[in-house]
Length: 107
Image 1 (cartoon, rainbow, N blue to C red):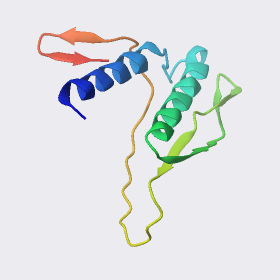
Image 2: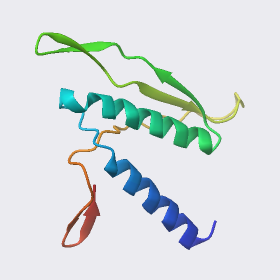
Image 3: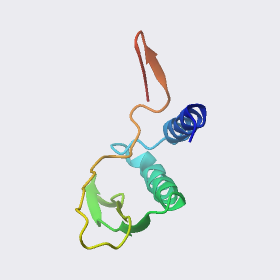
Image 4: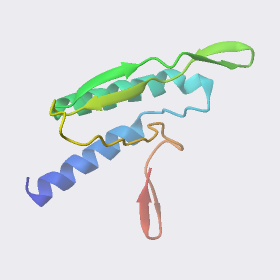
């Protein structure tokens, strides 16, 4: 992949990711966090990763059950001789959007 193509794909990913209002701490946006999970799972599938969405159950917020976002588990290949690598991260966006702070672009 040429550098320009790579940079365009990274920019597209971040623009899409930061445009999904997936603020996990706000119950009003919980559905969007689930949308983000689906987006990331599809992104992984597009590059050949076998994925599984794992239901994590509910949490109680203001006395009511609220569905937790799923964990997305991915697997590449079937070679039992290869090592396992765990990448753990969150996929909510706080705050929504892309921001520039003198020397950094973040979102």
